[in-house]
Amino acid sequence: MSVADLLAELLGTDLPVAVSAYDGSRLGPPDARTTVVVRLPDALRRLVTAPGELGFGRAYVAGDLDVEGDIFEVIDLAQQVQELRFGAKQVAAALRMVGAAGLKPLPPPAEEARLRGRRHSRERDAAAIAHHYDVSNDFYRMVLGPSLTYSCALWTDTTPTLEQAQANKYELICRKLALEPGMRLLDVGCGWGGMLLHAARHYHVRAVGVTLSRPQADHARKRVAELGLTDRIDVRFADFRDVDDGPYDAISSIGMFEHVGLVELDRYFRRCRGLLVPRGRMVNHGISRPAHTHRKDHRRFSPRMLGRGFTDRYVFPDGELHEVGTVVSAMQRAGFEVRHLESLREHYAKTLRCWVANLEAGWDDAQREVGPGRARVWRLYMAAAAVGFEHDTNQIHQILGTATVDGDSGFPLRPSFT
Image (tube, rainbow, N blue to C red; front, side, top):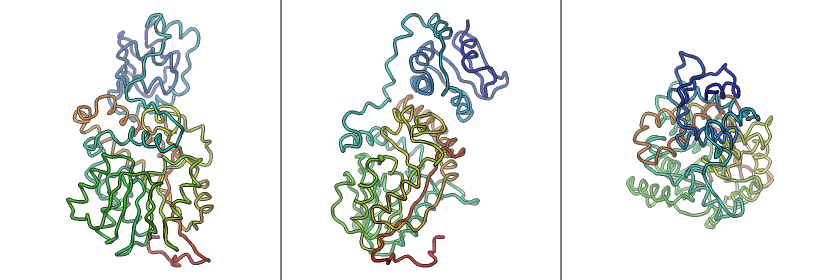
């Protein structure tokens, strides 16, 4: 039996892409634009010992198999791989190809996260953040573009560039927060400082940003200094839970919320509410899951991205998604009055496709910067995430809450941002 014969028994013959194997066998459309290349027997070994998306992901990250062509076409194949299960006949055939050692799992690629300690403890949260963000500032610049903004952009039919779309997003959040000169803004999970810079330059606020990534904090401080804004912006390498110099007039949390676990939701929003002045505002911008899915469904590779499979091990360790109604309820339990909610699902799909294009355009440089395995992680993850948003298996929402006091929200009858 050839490798192609084995894969045909497991996946069928009606595949969206071609498969070419090290033994010379081939499967799939003869005129396919995209080919999955099974380079080594270790790819089969990984699939036997970790059936489904995890084995597929490990084989790709390790370079045991490769993708030649359009990575987005492979996502359709990955959907079939999710359900891949080796029967006794297929296991026996695979073992004949890889030898008796095939039943012994290979060590996972070095890029796989290995966190220890209590989930969402300070130490483990710091390790999870470091795994994801402490990769390379230069790598992130290649992928994200000059703005170094790692969150959903805001597009219109005429938005010319990713940079402009990211500026649109920051501008919308500033308007939702009703920022004015002299106000104090806290940006939770400030990343490389994009929101801080936009708010200080265009709204003349005094801003504080906190991040658990030291490389992010160092680079954000450098950007602040280069723009002469050190008197307005304070970037801290710190845990948000240690911020104690309130009150603030406004709080933004952009692309950080995915790291807040379900058990921490109430504490997170109570902390935010306690740092705000009366009638202050908070915008929480985060990925969520649809109501028709259950938390356990987000263990899949594609398009359900934040779960206990590939993404949890390689991209967002301990990341969790919450249904948006759960988030709204948690905010209101903490004392916020939720005044506005907006979905940007399609916007994130477009943003992710831009990031994939950036990565592929600088593929050789990216591999030199972070290594082939890490570059492969991001290529596979971002393509699958884009498809997830396109198919409504991932969502993203901006939720605006006010620290209403005695019925006074300070909110106008017709806010200007709507």
